[in-house]
Length: 448
Ligand code: GDP
Ligand code: MG
Image (cartoon, rainbow, N blue to C red; front, side, top):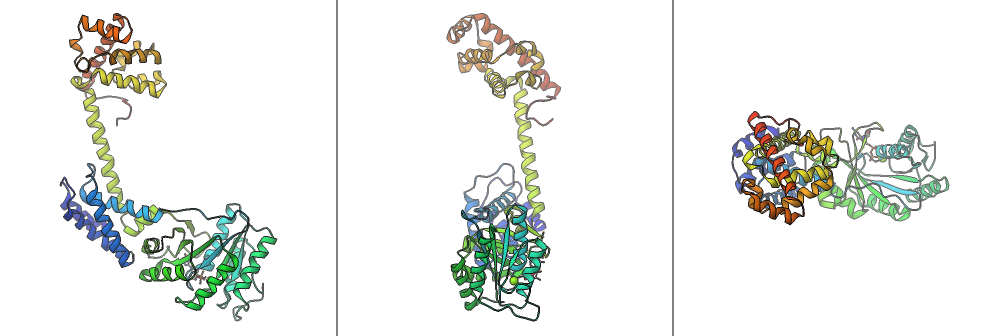
């Protein structure tokens, strides 16, 4: 699997500080293979890999991840970005009914989707109607009627109840579509889903029919239904439909199969149209709003690689937090600036009393702190701001004349300056004690 191959790549890369072109190439080779395995169209893969290389080279080196992991993360982010860049909801008409037209090759899953989508819309409080404008295929009308019945949604058909397995529906599909939309309007159905015919291959007559239906009913959405199993043909098919009929969104069907869904990336890249829904089985409920992140990890087939990456990032965060905590408890490093920061954090966070016990040095300062209010914190701030930078890091040098100057500068009595320095000394001592004891129970934001 990709994960195994990448694990080997990671081993080679581990420990290097910088992202070199060779590092990126090694990972890019694996990503290219994964994308081709997922049936992403060859030109799309080429373009994507070039883009990734370019972006990775410009990227600042992560401290949490090794270079290989970092490239994989960039790949994943880019994929999610491309797949979800313009994810949007169905475009509903200001004046109902909203008209949704389905197009795609025969067998793509349009008629099945019509049932699923109508059920989905019904669950959202809409009152959809289905229109059977596929008069090409024997039994197509009947199939839509069955789906409509299952979903509990009305179906407009040229000869309701008459079509049978042995009889082709007759009539003009453009007229049926037009009449169906008028029927929905008259019956106050707020969404109309127009099912259309498809051929086994791209065909100009079929395109023309679909284009005519489109101009006749002026749909708010034209959804191109694409079988995810179609593989490398996805791009050419999508391009033909985009040029021949035009569509506003894509539905990927048969994602319950082996297909890794590379078609999603191909079609998105080539047509710029968003994938909106996914069809994942033959029953009505096998239907999902499209999730770019799930699709990205399906295409790359690297769920476990991503979780390794997340783990690495988390443990790095933890190490950083511990390093900071260590600096915090180091008596030499704890300055009046840090003390002021803490005061301000308390002020920002509001409820001081609750936070008292969480603060380093809380035990020593508790009594004094309990009498604090925000105005007192303001005074402390004024006092500390009246000190020179040197005084803040080396309070020992603050002698009598300096205390007088600080008091004047901050508009307080010298006794208040004395009191503050005394409390600071206690806090410092407390820090030292905790540092030697090793523990810092309950410090905010620090792992316990
Ligand atoms: P249409 O020709 O575009 O209308 O395609 P249909 O809706 O008639 O579907 C063609 C076949 O694919 C039928 O046998 C469906 O049951 C099946 N089908 C449609 N969608 C899915 C899907 O998401 N998963 C699976 N496994 N089968 C599907
Ligand atoms: Mg059909």
